[in-house]
Amino acid sequence: MNYNFRYNDQIYRITLEDEEKETHFEFNGRKVSVQYQKIDNYVYSILSEGKSLCVGVLKNGKKVQVFFEGDLLELEAISERQKSSTAVDDSGAQVIISPMPSRVVKVLKKVGDDVQAGEGVIVVEAMKMESELKSNIDGKVTDIKVEEGDAVESGTALVSLSSE
Image 1 (spheres, rainbow, N blue to C red):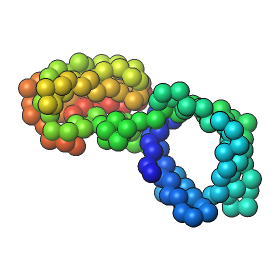
Image 2 (image 1 turned 180 degrees about the horizontal axis):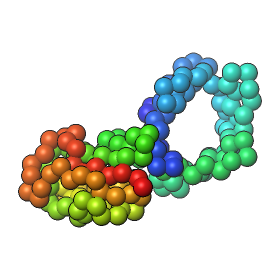
Image 3 (image 1 turned 90 degrees about the vertical axis):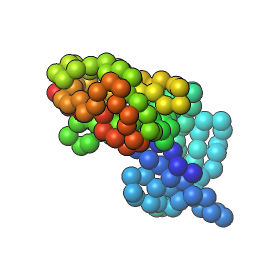
Image 4 (image 1 turned 120 degrees about the vertical axis):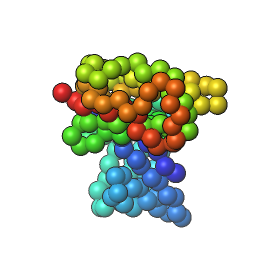
């Protein structure tokens, strides 16, 4: 099973593969074998690489809170579609890409505009449904690669943003 989570404006992919007595856990390309047991509704005991860990997990819709080694991590579960519609690189720049073949309905920002994380930047329409694509970062619009009315393919870069 594959899971995608957003944490601190970064997207992480976690893959779990269950075998007979072990689970293979892959996080950002690093694969580890783990054994785990559910202790109660929210607490898991995990054995990995000779180390025993206790992890608390509380899910509330798309929000997931993980208590691990004294830290509380707040994650947001995201779908493959959400993951593929934005890409943030290590410099903090973001390119909003078309998640599917669509038509650009409205460009909500112009080059130089400030954008807050979660704010809509562009609206596309596919199969008679409009989708507002949002920024994952606080920053500025640096480039708009399309115009209203343009037909775009899946994976087409629409708007570039830069963190300040």
